[in-house]
Length: 172
Image (cartoon, rainbow, N blue to C red; front, side, top):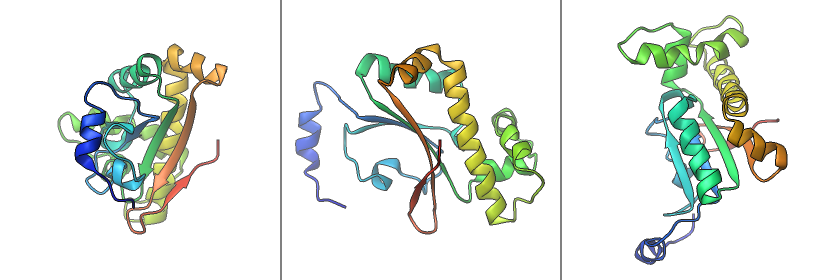
């Protein structure tokens, strides 16, 4: 990690921002995106929601990042040991969380049978969930799809290992 002059960065970004990436990540406290990717103030947009799921608010944030600000890269970052993924595997029911976990169910179904106590299975579902989110971004946002098709914006998926700190980018 590089040393940073945070006050200088605050001053430099006071009038405008030019983040090169927008990162959709889980809200898990072990996945601080700026630290994981060694970025500072103004470098990336952070979009955080349990299970790194896609909804209209997330899509709107991504559209703002790419179309208004000019961000060139969208990243969907899942992680190992994800509580939302485990909750979806277990079909947990808890108030408003229930609907959120339902959005992860297609990734559970695509991953076949397994247990939330099996770390490898949880990671497999987390990877499928990243792929599902990327598919939804392409399908549910004509604005982003047009930019992806034109090659003006990129979209990548990755998994962060909370045990090692390693990020693995997933194949397209």
